[in-house]
Each structure stands twice: as C-alpha cells, then as structure tokens.
View 1 (tube, rainbow, N blue to C red):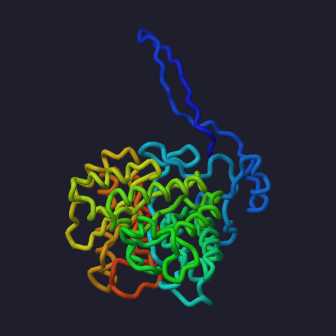
View 2 (cartoon, one colour; view 1 turned 120 degrees about the horizontal axis):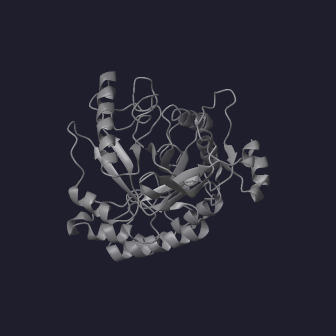
View 3 (cartoon, rainbow, N blue to C red; view 1 turned 180 degrees about the vertical axis):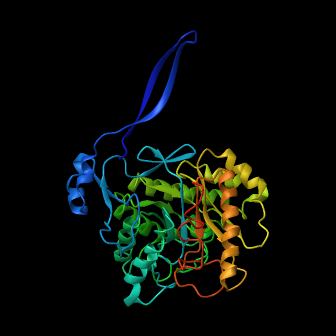
Length: 393
C-alpha cells in the first residue's frame, strides 16, 4: 500500500567520524481507507475522504474471475508533470504502451461491425494486460461522438475497458491531414481560425468539441490527457503558436489535472536547427514532448542528432508517442525479427532519456503486412515476457 512521501533527516553519530546527516526519502505507510470501497458508486460517494475510482494497479482481463472494474484509493489520482519527470501519487511514473487509430471506432475508419464493437473493444484491452501496458493513445475524433457530437457512449466504454485493464489513455482530438475525419488538410487558414468552425458535416467546431470532451472527463483519472492533433503542422510558426496557446489555455482551464501534448511534426521544423520546434514545445501550455520514430528499415538508424539536442534543451519530459516497426514478411519469423528490432530501439530510447514509449500501430486482427501488431501468440510484442512487458521503464 502506498503512502505519502516524507523527507526524513537521520542524524548518525560515528566514533571518530563526527556527526553525519543523511536525508532519505522514505515512504510513510498509512492505511488508505478508500481501498475498502470496491464499487465505483461507493468510491465516488466518499470523494470527501479523498477517494477516487482509478485504473487498476495491475490490470486484469474481462474473463478473469474476480476482475474488478477499477480500484478505489486515496491520494492524487492524476499523472503530474514536474520539470522533466512524470509523477503518479507522488511516485515516478514511466510507461510503455500502445498507440492506435483503431481503439475507438470512427465514422470513417472502423475496425469491426457495429454489433460487434463492444466485444471487440473489450478484447482489445484484454490483449494489452499480459504486456503490462500502462498507457494507450488513440484517435478520439468527433466522428466517434455521433451526429450531434455529444454522444460519448464510445468514449465511456473505452474508459471503462481501459480502467479495468490498468491503462491510462491519451485522446488524440484530430488529425492534421484529416485522416479518419472530415475537412481535409488542416492548413494555415484552419489553424488561424478555421478550427472555430465545424469541419465537413460535423455539428461542432474542433474547438467546441475538444472543450466538451475535456469538460466531460475532467475528473476522470483514467484520462492522462490530450493530444491536440495527430501530426500538428502545416502552418507558419506564429499561427501555430497562437492556436496551441488558445487550445492549451482552454483545455487546461476546463481540465487542469490532465496533460497536453502536440505530436508536432519535426520534419517541418528542423531546417532552422529546431528553433521553431523548440519554441512551440516550450510554450507554457505544453506539458511534455512526444515524438514519432518510424523504424522501417532492417538497420536501425540513430535519431536525428539535432532533435536529440533540442529535446535536451527543453525542460519537459519527452516520450515516443509513436514508435513503429515495419514487418519484412508475413510469417512468424518476420514477427520475431521485428520484435528483436523493437527491443533494440526501446533500449536506445531509454538511453536517450525518454520517459516512456508507445508502439504504433495496435490493431487487433490486422491482416496486411505493415507496422500493425496485436496480441496473437506468435507475435512477441504483447506476450508475457515480450517486448512491451520487458521495456526498461
């Protein structure tokens, strides 16, 4: 049982050595009365005691006897950013997990039939439990919220499944290229003000939809935070800065306990030695830096040295938001080769100072040879003792 962190000074007297003072960070173990409430409703009824319903510390599969939908506990339930570190309930929080376009059904990118969606999603989160995944990031566009933009039943279901599986989620609110969404490429005009207007046949503007999502889940510890767009970019720096600041102030104002990142395109900003990239990532509303690392060759190449230098100059945590590894064949041996490359790259990510990594693209039931993966027994990525389960965080 975790308690609060208390700084204790121990005075040690040694013969002939003088007085030494050692400051040790120790855990003060205290009974957490919130653990006695197993039901969500009971937990929320005792919020005055500091109780909150949170993701299970150890996720469980829906088929396991006694698998609880979450856990009630006291303390701070949200992931915090302090300088270059993440904290959860006062403890360091580092993570490995998955990134996906598919974990929440979209109007233009579906994974299964509507009548099978609930079962498919439940099984998708079940597949992440043996790997001890702690974070899942996925597309959560307005197309998942029904014609009105206010139907959050799919969002609610995703949160229930994630909480039970011991996973915190990042919601990607739009796509910079318009993929799996409406409205096409998000260009300078869109970032300058078009995001105040509905895209395509959507009812809500991007800004209004993002606000409604944040308002609904502002008190939900399962939601780690929000990614403004997949592949933010395609606009001049001042326009992007104004957009990021406006959206960041809006979301932090509504949901101050949740974190914000950009998925900013490095390739569009590196020509100036990363000056624009650094400036945008250092904006006060941005909580951490997330980068993409697509390793589509047999020989793993180092990350751009300028990018690593710039990340070292930003006093915020950096994570790999999408780490992808392309299959070189369709047989089981190809799955093993890809897993070996992923292990090597993950070790490098840790050495380069990243605080976590999400592997792209988790797609249960994939068929075509690509970077997609799932929990099939022949793929080591999500198996017990496999790539994700042994990640060095």
